[in-house]
Length: 164
Image 1 (tube, one colour):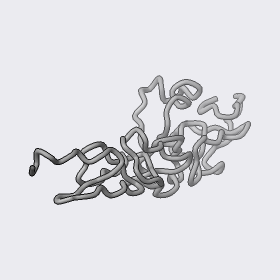
Image 2 (tube, rainbow, N blue to C red):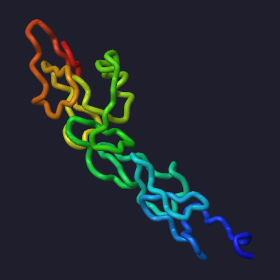
Image 3 (cartoon, rainbow, N blue to C red):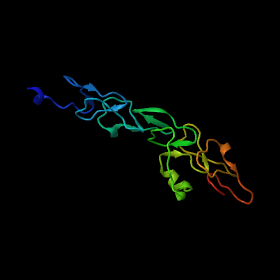
Image 4 (cartoon, rainbow, N blue to C red):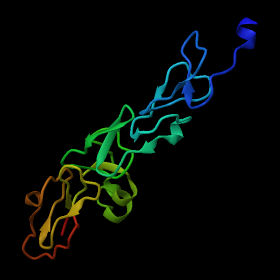
């Protein structure tokens, strides 16, 4: 008998030392087979169900929010956007000079970051708002339409374009 007759704790449950019955894996966690202590869902994901068996069962954080310790923790901060899977209210990306002004390519392909040039982001933004017609913004981190400046004389400025 002894350890030779012990069974591995089933997936979706946890078994602390000296267990005779597994406990349900709690919300915010997942429990692979053989778990003695529930594991928190990875940063940028959440879970409000019991008995998850794998980190992949945790859901990516919702639009406009960030997730820590297996739960939706709050809204993305102003000057940033969070499309999916963010673990901080202020996600940062480090684009190259070419990527910085590639609004339709680079900025549309990422899940979160500082508000891109030509745009502004209030609290909880998941899709940055374009500076309106006849205004521009060459820098990142715009918070409101007031951060977009007038189009210089002699130029035509289109919505979302960071420079004339």
